[in-house]
Length: 327
Image 1: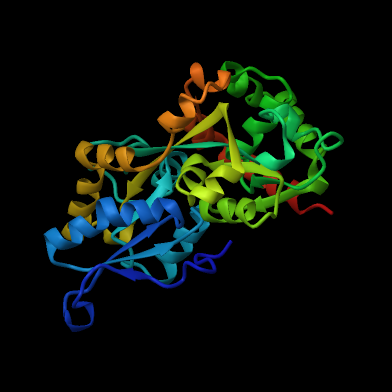
Image 2: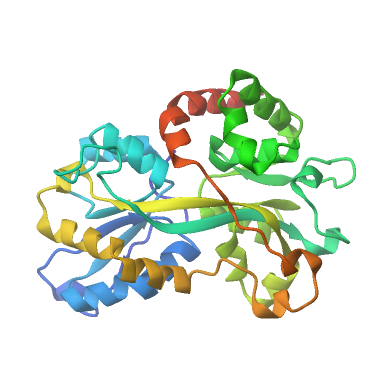
């Protein structure tokens, strides 16, 4: 995995006088697409104006090894890093992030500050009714590519949902060797049809460019699309997954009071709520009032179990990558 992605290599500066300023920018590592666009507007720009210091953002794919290599090759680079909460817990245990000195747990490097739903989006022109995850696997009735995240998190849960496992039983099943085999066997059924993505922006691009008939995607990437693009896609709301994200400070910046203050500000409930209010995560009132039975009683999202993945990500990821690379 690479740190930068095409279309995201150009950093964004939030200062009219950045080139004249002798104050170095605060550097932030986050996710591209709608996530960073929302953060720019709601979080980074106001803080840059408050601090009178430019903020530079770089997109990444969230890989822990990328952070590990960065800390080795060019430490002191990042003031704040956005990560999935399970990745943050693992990075904390590996000593890659600054800890709260009063807390020895793997949560001492940061707390969840954003929740983002992942759901199936699908091309309305190809379906008469809303497909389910079982339909996602039905390549006979619905031929075409499917896009999934190249990560066992969310992908294995989706495979089990498609295989009939109830949401409340997902992690009980995944905790057994038989359950893990079941998830991989289910993925094997659609291997030739999978288009992989590594970042939310890639997930949206695959669908919008016609690279897949349907796919897993953060809902905000679809809900924030242009009106014409929004009309192209339906969203399967009933079995969406909720992924928690958190802010961490790299260990090499642990003595940087500016970085610590910035991350503390990002984690404050006021900023959490501001991002939640700005991030598009649910259907609009117009859609809800359209009469669709699915939207009249919208169930809560299925929470991705951060504790499970913090404990098992390393071993399951090794198996997942070996499987994904097989011909």
